[in-house]
Length: 103
Image (cartoon, one colour):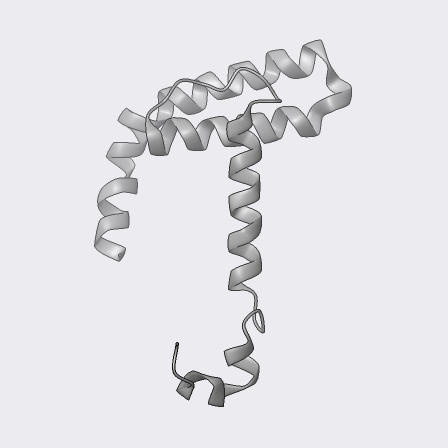
């Protein structure tokens, strides 16, 4: 995993591949904040989700704060966070459950 992460996130790749989407998201974020500064949290959520979509899936920027991709990303990250929390699974509390057949 370390080697794969290094190949995908080294300094050369960041400068050449990821800088333009991040710059575009920063510009869109600033213009969004100028238009409506009261909803700054929504603008930051949109910019973060849009940067992730651009970096991982190589898609265009998400234009709206109500885009379904934003809700999907937040729901996925929430589920991952809940699953990774210590004590989230009964087998961590009761180790003997591991020996019960799966049927």
